[in-house]
Length: 176
Image (cartoon, rainbow, N blue to C red; front, top):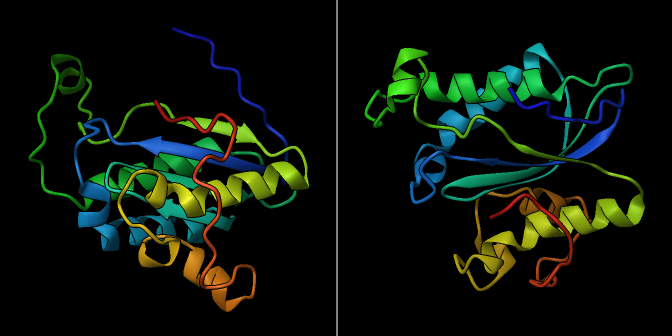
């Protein structure tokens, strides 16, 4: 088994990319209420702050800050994935390996994680979340995508409603 190296910094801030197994699927936006419930249930059990999030049809990006003395983001993602999968009917195709392990064929097993290093890194990753629907051609304006924390942040005065960002944000963000 591969030895995945992850940074575990109590109270740290991370950027994540989490993908569906079938990248042409639209489950995340088709069942956004189930995803929101999965996140809420997980946050009740294991709190964390959502600094930024964007949900696209087949993947999502998020920036989280964990509580002091807590670095367990993996359990949180496992719970979110599990709650979401349990809320869906069993209609997906299963590989022999997944069927043998009694796994659902909804999520990719792993996720991309990046420890935020400083304020510039934080800003770049939050902006990447906001601009991502434009980058993928889902909308032409950031404000037109309903499945992101952009609208919350506009209300908080973080972004103006007409913020356009930069679709060419540089960096590694866990997307193929």
